[in-house]
Each structure stands twice: as C-alpha cells, then as structure tokens.
Length: 400
Image (cartoon, rainbow, N blue to C red; front, side, top):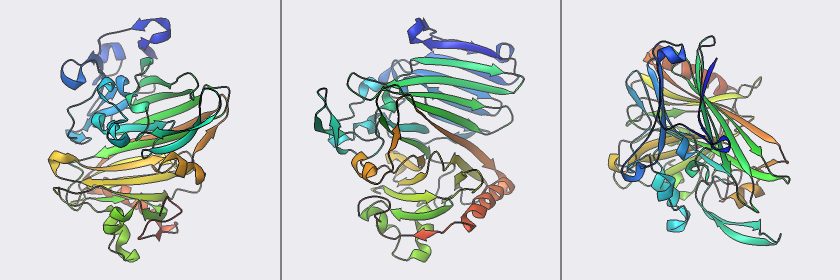
C-alpha cells in the first residue's frame, strides 16, 4: 500500500500540485493529480482528479469533498448547472434570497447536504451561548458542501486493486455542534463503480443532531425525454401541491408519472417526491437507477436503508440553460425544515463521541443486458414492498 498526504492542517502539511502516474501508484492505466484552479468563481478551489481505466472522477476538497464531475467510457456523469463552477465557498452567501444562497455554488455531480441540517430553509430553536433557547433561521442544505477539508490523502493499493481519496471536513464553532465528516472515495480498475464511505463523528461532549443527504445529480446523456427513475418503495408522496400536479390524481399511474422525465421545458418549476425505499430484508441494500429511454444505459445509486432510510427524487426538467437535471437523494431524513423532521423523529441523535456511517455507491450500466439486470434487481425488491402511492402530500413525509 502506498499513501501520499496532500493536506494535513494540524501537521502543517500542504502540497500544491501532485501528479501520480502508473509507476508511482503501481497500477496501470491509473493516475491521480491535484491542482488549484485559478480565475473566476473557481479561483482557489482545489481539484483532485482520479483516473482509473475508463472511469474518472473530479473531487473537490475545497467544497466538502464533493464529486464535481465524472465520466465513464466517454459518457458524462453529472449535469450542466447555470453556475460557472466549481465555485469557491467564499462566493456563496447561504443566507441570501431567504436562505437559498447555497444554490450559487451548486453544480456538483454528487454533493452532501448537512451535517447540522440538510433541508429547506426555515426557523428552528437552538440554545445560545448562555444556554437559552433562541429562534434562528437555518439555510438550505446546510454547511458541509461549502466547508474545505482540513485533511486529504490518497492511497494506492495494487494488491487489492483500489485507489482511494480520503478527506476530513469539520463543522465546528464555539457554542455550536462539533461534527466531523471522514470520507473515503474508492475506485477499482475495470469497474464503473465509485464508492463513497462516510463516517460522521460527534466531537462534542454533549449530544448532537445530524442530518445527511446525498444529492446525486444526473443530466444528459442519461436524462432525456422518457427517461425514468426505477426505485423500489414501500410508500411515496409528493412534497407539495406543485409536485402533486405532476401525478394526475390516479394512484395507479402516479408513480410512473412521478418517475418519468419530460424533455427540457422552459419555465418548468421543480417537483420533488418523497419515498420510503424498500430493501433486501437480509442486509438493507437498496438502489435506484435513472434509465435512458432506449434502455442503452443507466446511472445507478446504491445505498443501505438502515443508514439512509429516506429517498427524495428531485425533478428539475427545465430548459437546458436553466439546469436540466434529476436528483436521486438517499438520506437520513427528508429535506423538510429541521423542526419538521425532528418532530417526525427522523433527525439522527449522536451521543458524545458517537459515529454514524453511510455508504453510497454510484455505477454505470451499459447495454441492454446490464440495464435489464439493474431493472430486474430493482423489480425483485419492489415485488416484496407494500407500494403505497399517495397523490397528495402526506403527513408521513412532511407538512400537508
């Protein structure tokens, strides 16, 4: 095993650029580079590029170890946001526009939302520095995506045929929760799979709340008119009246309407659907997939329902210039306000020193045979699920 430390704030280690090829890594057709971007909104953003055979992924330590872009066999993984990114966190004022400022930096393929909160902007009650309850305004999707990592390393293990990038990101302040994300992102030669293995640790000596959501975003060539998201579920409901508009009022056809994409549509207003995903009973494994209309390819998101028991489908099939995208979002909770999710019992409570682990795997299925295999896997789980479809917002998922 070979390891290189790129950043260790505590030890005073900083490496500006790295170029590790097959000779250094001990693995053919593999390369890891690091550079700092210059110019525009990206000035000062560190980018770690991992290439492993026909798979590549760009990781952003400056933006909470998010996955900015990817590709597999020439197919783009991610989407084209109306944002000239990646955007340095210094340009993101999360509190603007009623708490929607987070969107100024949002153009990643996979971005985490959390850790203290991950949902819609809104009021919540916290304790101030004197231990008194006060009302504060929480912003959209939390802080982790705009927080730089304080530790980054890369590892090559030729014996196990794996490349890994590890990062540690801390959400910390005096008289605030102290949460630390430790992530390892892994790829293997000959595979289309990227594994994100995360642990969130409560560094405080008092209990802390945790909300964690993986915003996995896909545009063309996986997204097109007629693309559909296959997901096994016990129950689903629209987030709000706008999402209910897309269901047509018939429970027998609502799930198909919810999970099928339109062509790019100017002026489209986002629709979100909440799912309680179903899993294999023996291990909690579940998955969802965005399947192209001609069944030639699919983007797959795998997760464990014991770690991430909630799933949101975000449909933003707006004009291409506005961000034509669908998001598959496994999470600890639904992205309502934290007050709503706390009342529903979906906020994770971490005791002092406690950890919450979560693993998400992203992969590409190519060709009708592979795509059919993924669809069959989802269908096998779905056949055992209760499949309750609500055509209006439901109290089990949030405000009605």
